[in-house]
Amino acid sequence: MQKNWYVVYTKPHHEKKVSLLLSKKRIENFCPLNNIKTKSLRRNKLLQEPLFKSYVFVNISVPDINAIRQTDGVISLLYWMGKPAIIKDDEIETIKEFTNDHQNIELERTQVNTSEMVKIIAGPSYSIEGKILALKNKNVKVNLPSLGYTLVAKIEDESIFGRDASILQNNSFSHS
View 1: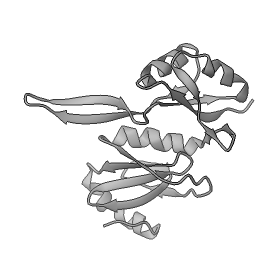
View 2: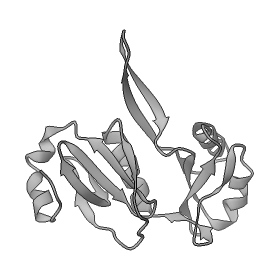
View 3: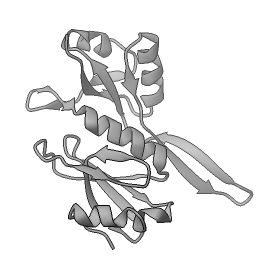
């Protein structure tokens, strides 16, 4: 049976717990974590918070949906047009790469559009499926159309404006 990525809606602040419980049930899941640098008077801290509040992604087939619903901390699946919303594999990979490569990621709400997807080169060492909306003032934005979000992060690596800027120009993406 074919597996798809779905969004599990959890109780507030239960994302990590739900992810752990799903892993114990041997259900493939992904709880993207945002590394946030905070400054205090004495030292800098690195906190890991869920990127999507109350969301955990699961890769399951339709018959496994009931096992998900019976997991402690799960409220429901996210629905789109009366059916559980399916998230594209490419978007899950985009989120994984983006969270590995960037810190202090912010989310912006956008319109859901499941028909628009392009392949882009976003940096010196990785390619992702998604749409770069802009590279401006050392910020990169990647659109996730089936989720209705845009990931926004400051670029730590200056090389994206050097060697790879010509690739971005050739693909007609905005940058400055």
